[in-house]
Each structure stands twice: as C-alpha cells, then as structure tokens.
Image 1: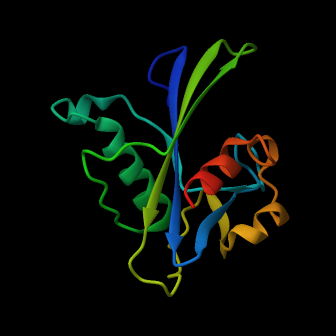
Image 2: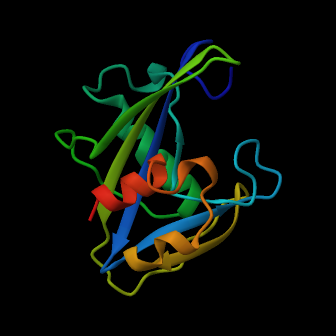
Length: 155
C-alpha cells in the first residue's frame, strides 16, 4: 500500500503551477503505472501524516513535497490555503476510494523556468490554456477529466 493512506482510501493531489499565462505540464514516463506517456500536473498521492502529526493541514506539506520532488521547485503554500478543486472516485475493481485535490500556485518569475524533471517523468511543457486540448491526459483530460478541470478552474 505504498501510495495510499489505507488499503481502501487514497488522497491524490495535483497542482497547476502558473508562470504568467502558462501552466506547467509534466509528461509521465513510458513505464508509469498509471497513464504511461500521458501528460500530467505535478503532484501525487498523500503519505500517511506520521511525520507531520501536529500540522493542521498535513496535505499541504504533501503537495509541496511532491512539487519539489517532481520539478525541483520549492513552493510555499499557506496553512490557510484551500484546494481549488475537490472530487472523488471509487475504483470498484480495486475497491479503492480516491479523494482528488487540485491546487493552484503562481510563480513570481514569468520566464517559465525549466523544472528539474524527476525520473517519474520524461518531459515538460509550459502551455497556454488555449493549447490544453492538444495534450493527451488520458482519462484525466477532456471536458470531464480532473487534470483539465484543475487547469481550467485555476485560471
């Protein structure tokens, strides 16, 4: 159960990182367990908060950690900040209930810095909202997919 809080519950967090009018996308590695070779936002599954029990919102530390691991960017989200997107999904075949949280972060630098892409990804792109439909997000894209919604809601 490395990527779940319990055997039947996980929290998946993604963040739309904006630099000016462009959002950062990461291309998942071809050997990724889920959506191989498709585009994504930085983020991942929350870890059980044993290391940060005293925090009011341990999920904030999780999304900051994921962003740093996947991009090299150190972001600062305030304890009072709230997700811009919340959804849930039940995978009947695995009997796993997923809570999906979407975040927004604006980089101060508008030069679209190059992220230090982790081994989980093979490429990156800074895109405008008008280019969104040109990228394959798999089931997480299109009009109803959570990645597309997080990007659109964050504008």
